[in-house]
Length: 270
Image 1 (cartoon, rainbow, N blue to C red):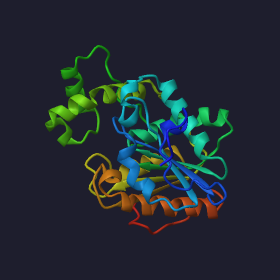
Image 2: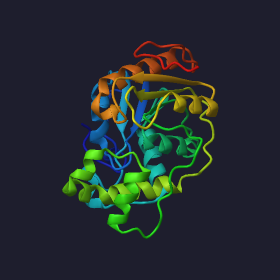
Image 3: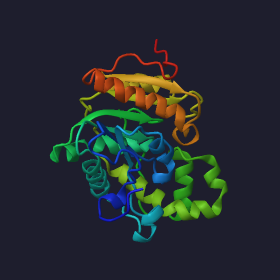
Protein backbone atom coordinates (compact mmCIF):
# COMPACT_ATOMS: atom_id res chain seq x y z
CA UNK A 1 0.00 0.00 0.00
CA UNK A 2 1.28 3.46 -0.84
CA UNK A 3 1.44 5.69 2.26
CA UNK A 4 -1.06 8.52 2.20
CA UNK A 5 1.68 11.09 1.79
CA UNK A 6 -0.10 13.68 -0.31
CA UNK A 7 -3.46 14.84 -1.59
CA UNK A 8 -3.38 12.60 -4.64
CA UNK A 9 -2.23 9.23 -3.32
CA UNK A 10 -4.43 9.74 -0.28
CA UNK A 11 -7.45 9.35 -2.54
CA UNK A 12 -6.44 6.13 -4.28
CA UNK A 13 -4.96 2.86 -3.17
CA UNK A 14 -2.43 1.66 -5.75
CA UNK A 15 -1.34 -1.76 -4.56
CA UNK A 16 0.06 -3.07 -7.83
CA UNK A 17 2.52 -1.94 -10.45
CA UNK A 18 4.45 0.70 -8.52
CA UNK A 19 7.52 0.35 -10.76
CA UNK A 20 6.99 2.73 -13.68
CA UNK A 21 9.63 0.83 -15.66
CA UNK A 22 7.45 -2.29 -15.90
CA UNK A 23 3.87 -1.10 -16.02
CA UNK A 24 2.46 -0.74 -19.53
CA UNK A 25 -1.03 0.51 -18.71
CA UNK A 26 -3.16 1.86 -15.88
CA UNK A 27 -6.61 0.93 -14.61
CA UNK A 28 -8.64 3.28 -12.43
CA UNK A 29 -11.67 1.72 -10.74
CA UNK A 30 -14.66 3.80 -9.60
CA UNK A 31 -16.94 2.22 -6.96
CA UNK A 32 -20.73 2.22 -6.88
CA UNK A 33 -22.70 4.75 -4.82
CA UNK A 34 -21.94 4.59 -1.11
CA UNK A 35 -18.90 2.34 -1.57
CA UNK A 36 -15.20 2.85 -0.99
CA UNK A 37 -11.92 1.28 -2.04
CA UNK A 38 -12.68 -1.95 -0.16
CA UNK A 39 -15.54 -2.79 -2.54
CA UNK A 40 -13.12 -3.21 -5.46
CA UNK A 41 -9.94 -4.04 -3.58
CA UNK A 42 -10.08 -7.69 -4.71
CA UNK A 43 -9.87 -6.59 -8.35
CA UNK A 44 -6.87 -4.49 -7.51
CA UNK A 45 -5.10 -7.40 -5.84
CA UNK A 46 -5.55 -9.50 -8.98
CA UNK A 47 -3.88 -6.89 -11.16
CA UNK A 48 -0.60 -8.05 -12.80
CA UNK A 49 2.60 -6.04 -12.29
CA UNK A 50 2.38 -4.49 -15.76
CA UNK A 51 -1.02 -2.91 -14.99
CA UNK A 52 -0.89 -0.12 -12.42
CA UNK A 53 -4.27 -0.27 -10.70
CA UNK A 54 -6.03 2.05 -8.28
CA UNK A 55 -9.47 2.62 -6.81
CA UNK A 56 -10.88 6.10 -6.24
CA UNK A 57 -11.58 6.85 -2.59
CA UNK A 58 -14.09 9.67 -2.33
CA UNK A 59 -14.47 11.81 0.78
CA UNK A 60 -16.48 10.58 3.75
CA UNK A 61 -15.50 6.90 3.66
CA UNK A 62 -12.81 4.61 5.03
CA UNK A 63 -9.62 6.56 5.84
CA UNK A 64 -11.30 9.78 4.66
CA UNK A 65 -14.33 9.31 6.93
CA UNK A 66 -13.40 12.16 9.26
CA UNK A 67 -13.10 14.56 6.32
CA UNK A 68 -16.88 14.49 5.92
CA UNK A 69 -18.88 14.01 2.76
CA UNK A 70 -18.87 16.24 -0.31
CA UNK A 71 -21.85 16.45 -2.63
CA UNK A 72 -20.30 18.41 -5.50
CA UNK A 73 -20.12 16.75 -8.91
CA UNK A 74 -17.14 18.94 -9.81
CA UNK A 75 -15.25 17.71 -6.75
CA UNK A 76 -15.99 14.06 -7.58
CA UNK A 77 -14.79 14.51 -11.16
CA UNK A 78 -11.66 16.26 -9.92
CA UNK A 79 -10.99 13.31 -7.59
CA UNK A 80 -11.21 10.96 -10.58
CA UNK A 81 -9.02 13.18 -12.74
CA UNK A 82 -6.30 13.59 -10.12
CA UNK A 83 -6.30 9.88 -9.35
CA UNK A 84 -6.04 9.11 -13.07
CA UNK A 85 -3.12 11.51 -13.43
CA UNK A 86 -1.34 9.79 -10.55
CA UNK A 87 -1.83 6.36 -12.08
CA UNK A 88 -1.32 6.98 -15.79
CA UNK A 89 2.24 8.26 -15.82
CA UNK A 90 2.88 6.23 -18.95
CA UNK A 91 0.86 3.93 -21.15
CA UNK A 92 -2.89 3.92 -21.83
CA UNK A 93 -5.50 4.54 -19.13
CA UNK A 94 -8.52 2.27 -18.70
CA UNK A 95 -11.50 3.03 -16.48
CA UNK A 96 -13.66 0.49 -14.65
CA UNK A 97 -16.95 1.80 -13.32
CA UNK A 98 -19.03 -0.38 -11.03
CA UNK A 99 -22.76 0.34 -11.41
CA UNK A 100 -23.15 4.12 -10.91
CA UNK A 101 -19.36 4.40 -11.05
CA UNK A 102 -19.67 3.98 -14.81
CA UNK A 103 -21.71 7.20 -14.96
CA UNK A 104 -18.95 9.03 -13.11
CA UNK A 105 -16.35 7.54 -15.45
CA UNK A 106 -18.22 8.84 -18.49
CA UNK A 107 -18.80 12.26 -16.93
CA UNK A 108 -15.07 12.61 -16.25
CA UNK A 109 -14.12 12.49 -19.94
CA UNK A 110 -13.80 16.23 -20.45
CA UNK A 111 -11.88 16.80 -17.22
CA UNK A 112 -9.47 14.02 -18.19
CA UNK A 113 -9.11 15.43 -21.71
CA UNK A 114 -8.32 18.86 -20.25
CA UNK A 115 -5.36 17.25 -18.50
CA UNK A 116 -4.25 15.53 -21.68
CA UNK A 117 -5.36 12.09 -20.45
CA UNK A 118 -7.00 9.86 -23.06
CA UNK A 119 -9.19 6.94 -22.03
CA UNK A 120 -8.23 3.79 -23.93
CA UNK A 121 -11.28 1.82 -22.85
CA UNK A 122 -14.12 1.59 -20.34
CA UNK A 123 -15.27 -1.49 -18.42
CA UNK A 124 -18.84 -0.92 -17.25
CA UNK A 125 -19.81 -3.48 -14.61
CA UNK A 126 -23.49 -3.91 -13.71
CA UNK A 127 -24.16 -0.51 -15.27
CA UNK A 128 -27.23 0.62 -17.22
CA UNK A 129 -26.62 2.18 -20.62
CA UNK A 130 -26.08 5.97 -20.58
CA UNK A 131 -29.14 6.63 -22.72
CA UNK A 132 -31.48 7.79 -19.95
CA UNK A 133 -30.82 10.19 -17.06
CA UNK A 134 -30.40 8.78 -13.58
CA UNK A 135 -33.19 9.14 -11.05
CA UNK A 136 -33.01 12.64 -9.60
CA UNK A 137 -32.87 12.87 -5.82
CA UNK A 138 -35.61 15.22 -4.55
CA UNK A 139 -34.34 17.95 -2.25
CA UNK A 140 -35.23 18.27 1.42
CA UNK A 141 -35.87 14.58 2.15
CA UNK A 142 -35.62 13.41 5.75
CA UNK A 143 -33.48 10.34 6.38
CA UNK A 144 -36.58 8.16 6.48
CA UNK A 145 -37.86 9.61 3.21
CA UNK A 146 -34.41 9.20 1.66
CA UNK A 147 -34.34 5.51 2.63
CA UNK A 148 -37.78 5.04 1.04
CA UNK A 149 -36.50 6.75 -2.11
CA UNK A 150 -33.47 4.45 -2.18
CA UNK A 151 -35.70 1.39 -1.96
CA UNK A 152 -37.59 2.35 -5.10
CA UNK A 153 -35.09 4.36 -7.16
CA UNK A 154 -31.59 2.88 -6.70
CA UNK A 155 -29.97 -0.52 -6.90
CA UNK A 156 -29.02 -1.03 -3.26
CA UNK A 157 -28.21 -4.42 -1.68
CA UNK A 158 -31.46 -5.47 0.05
CA UNK A 159 -29.56 -6.62 3.13
CA UNK A 160 -28.42 -3.06 3.78
CA UNK A 161 -31.94 -2.02 4.70
CA UNK A 162 -32.06 -4.79 7.31
CA UNK A 163 -28.89 -3.59 9.07
CA UNK A 164 -30.04 -0.35 10.69
CA UNK A 165 -26.65 0.52 12.19
CA UNK A 166 -24.81 0.06 8.90
CA UNK A 167 -27.51 1.94 7.01
CA UNK A 168 -27.28 4.88 9.40
CA UNK A 169 -23.49 4.93 8.98
CA UNK A 170 -23.71 4.89 5.19
CA UNK A 171 -26.57 7.35 4.74
CA UNK A 172 -24.34 10.47 4.47
CA UNK A 173 -22.21 8.78 1.79
CA UNK A 174 -25.23 7.49 -0.10
CA UNK A 175 -26.97 10.85 0.01
CA UNK A 176 -23.86 12.69 -1.20
CA UNK A 177 -23.30 10.20 -4.01
CA UNK A 178 -26.94 10.35 -5.10
CA UNK A 179 -26.85 14.15 -5.13
CA UNK A 180 -23.75 14.05 -7.32
CA UNK A 181 -25.20 11.48 -9.71
CA UNK A 182 -28.41 13.52 -9.96
CA UNK A 183 -26.34 16.56 -10.96
CA UNK A 184 -24.39 14.89 -13.77
CA UNK A 185 -25.12 16.02 -17.34
CA UNK A 186 -28.18 14.27 -18.71
CA UNK A 187 -26.62 13.89 -22.17
CA UNK A 188 -23.52 11.67 -22.08
CA UNK A 189 -21.47 11.70 -25.24
CA UNK A 190 -19.90 8.58 -26.72
CA UNK A 191 -16.57 7.59 -25.26
CA UNK A 192 -14.69 7.34 -28.54
CA UNK A 193 -13.01 4.21 -27.19
CA UNK A 194 -13.97 0.54 -26.81
CA UNK A 195 -16.41 -0.40 -24.04
CA UNK A 196 -16.85 -3.74 -22.30
CA UNK A 197 -20.19 -4.22 -20.52
CA UNK A 198 -20.00 -6.90 -17.82
CA UNK A 199 -23.29 -8.16 -16.39
CA UNK A 200 -24.04 -10.86 -13.86
CA UNK A 201 -26.02 -13.74 -15.33
CA UNK A 202 -28.52 -13.45 -12.48
CA UNK A 203 -28.64 -9.65 -12.34
CA UNK A 204 -32.15 -8.80 -11.18
CA UNK A 205 -31.95 -5.28 -12.62
CA UNK A 206 -30.10 -5.55 -15.94
CA UNK A 207 -29.92 -7.95 -18.88
CA UNK A 208 -29.22 -8.38 -22.59
CA UNK A 209 -31.54 -5.49 -23.48
CA UNK A 210 -29.21 -3.18 -21.57
CA UNK A 211 -26.27 -4.33 -23.68
CA UNK A 212 -28.29 -3.49 -26.79
CA UNK A 213 -28.88 -0.01 -25.37
CA UNK A 214 -25.14 0.35 -24.77
CA UNK A 215 -24.54 -0.65 -28.40
CA UNK A 216 -27.12 1.87 -29.59
CA UNK A 217 -25.18 4.50 -27.65
CA UNK A 218 -21.71 3.52 -28.87
CA UNK A 219 -20.53 1.29 -31.69
CA UNK A 220 -17.45 -0.31 -30.08
CA UNK A 221 -19.35 -2.11 -27.32
CA UNK A 222 -18.97 -5.75 -26.32
CA UNK A 223 -21.25 -7.41 -23.77
CA UNK A 224 -20.12 -10.26 -21.55
CA UNK A 225 -21.99 -12.16 -18.84
CA UNK A 226 -20.34 -13.72 -15.80
CA UNK A 227 -21.77 -15.79 -12.95
CA UNK A 228 -23.40 -13.68 -10.26
CA UNK A 229 -26.02 -11.05 -9.57
CA UNK A 230 -26.05 -7.26 -9.72
CA UNK A 231 -23.18 -6.91 -7.23
CA UNK A 232 -20.98 -9.35 -9.12
CA UNK A 233 -17.86 -7.16 -8.79
CA UNK A 234 -18.05 -7.54 -5.01
CA UNK A 235 -19.35 -11.11 -4.81
CA UNK A 236 -17.42 -12.70 -7.72
CA UNK A 237 -14.45 -10.42 -8.46
CA UNK A 238 -12.40 -13.17 -10.14
CA UNK A 239 -15.02 -13.57 -12.88
CA UNK A 240 -15.11 -9.82 -13.46
CA UNK A 241 -11.34 -9.63 -13.48
CA UNK A 242 -11.00 -12.36 -16.13
CA UNK A 243 -13.32 -10.43 -18.43
CA UNK A 244 -11.70 -7.05 -17.68
CA UNK A 245 -8.10 -8.21 -18.10
CA UNK A 246 -8.86 -9.95 -21.40
CA UNK A 247 -10.50 -6.75 -22.66
CA UNK A 248 -7.53 -4.61 -21.63
CA UNK A 249 -5.02 -6.92 -23.27
CA UNK A 250 -7.04 -7.12 -26.49
CA UNK A 251 -7.51 -3.36 -26.73
CA UNK A 252 -3.78 -2.84 -26.26
CA UNK A 253 -2.90 -5.55 -28.78
CA UNK A 254 -5.44 -4.39 -31.35
CA UNK A 255 -4.74 -0.67 -30.98
CA UNK A 256 -8.18 0.07 -29.58
CA UNK A 257 -10.20 -2.46 -31.59
CA UNK A 258 -11.22 -5.34 -29.29
CA UNK A 259 -12.03 -8.66 -30.90
CA UNK A 260 -14.15 -11.46 -29.55
CA UNK A 261 -13.04 -12.77 -26.18
CA UNK A 262 -13.78 -15.90 -24.24
CA UNK A 263 -13.19 -15.20 -20.53
CA UNK A 264 -16.91 -15.75 -19.96
CA UNK A 265 -20.06 -16.52 -21.90
CA UNK A 266 -20.88 -13.95 -24.56
CA UNK A 267 -24.35 -12.46 -24.20
CA UNK A 268 -26.46 -13.48 -27.19
CA UNK A 269 -28.12 -10.49 -28.80
CA UNK A 270 -30.79 -11.25 -31.42
